[in-house]
Structures are given as C-alpha cells and as structure tokens.
Image 1 (spheres, rainbow, N blue to C red):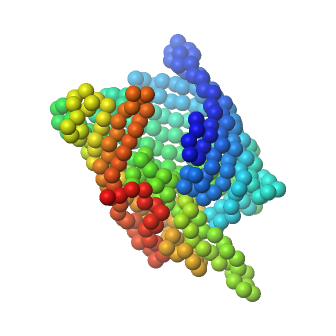
Image 2: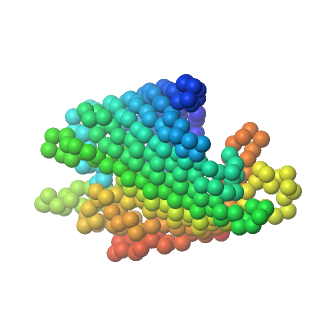
Image 3: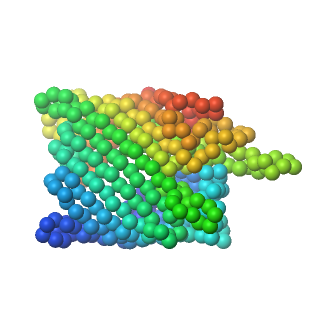
Amino acid sequence: MINDYSKSLTLDYRDPYFTLDGISLGGKVFYNEFEASDANIVDYNNQSYGASLTWGFPFDELNYFDFSIGYTHNLISNLESYYQIDKFKEVQEKNLTSDGGLEVDDFDWSISWTRNNLNKGYFPTAGNYQRAYYRMTIPGSDVQFFKMQYDVRQYIPLNEGHDFTLLLRGRLGYGNGYGKAGDNEQLLPFYENFYAGGFSTLRGFRSNTAGPKAVYNTGGASGTNNPVYEGTDESVGGNATALASVELIVPTPFASPEIQRSIRTSVFVDAASVWDTEFDPNVPVASGAQYVYDYSDPTNYRASYGAALQWMSPMGHWCSLSLNRLKNMKVMTKNSSHSPSDVHSNF
C-alpha cells in the first residue's frame, strides 16, 4: 500500500476455522516506511518491520476475542529534538544511533474484545459496535509501554423505515511507559502517540493536527542556563485521547432508492481532545505562544459541525466528503488560541 506518507508491504494470512469450534489462527509479516511530515506530524522517518501471530476466540454470536504476540523493529531517523521528546530520548539514550536517530526492538502481546450486533456490514442503521484493545510490550523490550483504546458506535433508528438514524460515536485511549531504564521512568514512545483530525476522528480539521504542538528549546539565555522555548504549529500528538460525535443520518436528497443503498448523507457535531499527561504546563515560552496551551489538560478540546456525504464506490472502497464549520470550543487558557493550520475546510 502506498499513500502520501507511507509505503507498506504486508503478507497476512488467517484461517477462520483452525479448529472445529471456531478458533482462528493467523499471522503476518510486514515492512513499512513512514514519513511523519507528510502526515502533518513533526518530522521524522520510521522504517519498521516485524511479524505477529494471532488467535481468535468466538465467545458467542456477538462477542469475539483476539490474542496476539508480535515483534517490531523500528529504525527512526531525521529525529528532531523538542521539549516533548527530550525526556524520552534521555530514557532511550543507549538506543540512540550515531546520527541522533533511534533503533529499538520490541516484543509485545495484545488482547482485544469486539462486540458487533449491527444490522448491516456497511451503512448500518441499527445496532451497536464496541471494541476494546490492550497492547503491552514484554519486559526486557527496548521500550516498555502499554496502550489501550475503547471504541463504541450506537445506531438508533428514528422511524420504522430507518430513513432517519441517530449515530452516537465515542473513543477513549491512553498509553504510558512502565518500569525504568536506569534511573528514568519509561514513557510511551512518540511514534505510538494518539492524534485527532481528519474524517475518521474530527472532521473539518486537517489530519492529525488537533492537539499538542512541538515546543522547541532554542537555547539558554545569555550568561545563564535558563532554557528559552519556542512554540510551533507542528503536531506531536499525546498519550491520551477522548472523542465524541453525534450524527443524524438522513435520506440523500434527489437520490433514487437504488442509489440510496450506496450513498449516505448526514449532519454531525464532532468533538475531540488529545493531551499529554507528562507535559509540564509551566514551561516558559518566549515566542510562538499562540500555539502553546496546557497540553496536559483534557478539557482543551476542539469541535466542528457540518454535513457529510459518504458513498461506496464500485471497487468496494469508502469515499467521503464533508462541509464543516469549525468552532474553537476548547477551554481557553492564558496562552491558548486556535491555530489556522488546523483547519482543513469550512464554509
């Protein structure tokens, strides 16, 4: 798969009937090249490869569990130094490369639970979908961290023909390090951060741009060791996220019943917050203060509302378009403001 910011090759196989009682067995090997700046994230390059094995366990008709073990090698280059990452680089000092990059090997295990009682595989109009996921690197890995996420979607039909449906959507995510590396506490690696912005999370904002920005140390003041920090509009993500969305699905105007099956029209309100529980809100900023607020505060959220159009192409791919109006609904702090670089489209 190739897109604007990533090149990946994955060989994936899964046998859904590995045993007679429905236990599945699968595995994959992968190689990926990621260019963060092309994904609207502070610049770094990551070449990664790895492999994993997955077992699936059906509990009943609605509930399904997955268990996986895997290995990942990350070789990160073009790694800049900024406030949010400097502490992580201190923890991983022994894994830094000669050119200031990072090379780590991690072994992990994960478990997930999925509950699905939607009435359709695509464009559902009734039912509930939930997924909870937990991943943790095995002690002794170069980076010791855990990460968890919970997603839920609830479709509530408002009339007998399901022409009008209310969709409620939410997400909670959190990750952090565990244990120590020398005298330093382990941290969630920056390449595992959560992000918000884009059609799947926060419509109206450019992909990955809603949330904490990179804060650079531009050097100590003359004759002192006091650092001087500069705020920027470069997104760095955070180790926690919360998302909520309310969407009213309505009939597509002037579309025939046949076309209605492959097109969905809706109006929505999205809100999302990404924050960094390890961020010090008292960091002194000499310039770029308009990009800096309390990144450790989850109440500093972004929101948008608008209309969306989705359709299923003949190739079976999702396509989408949204018109949005943005609202700076985050709680204001002394240095907070709405960055124009977050905006993707509005009317």
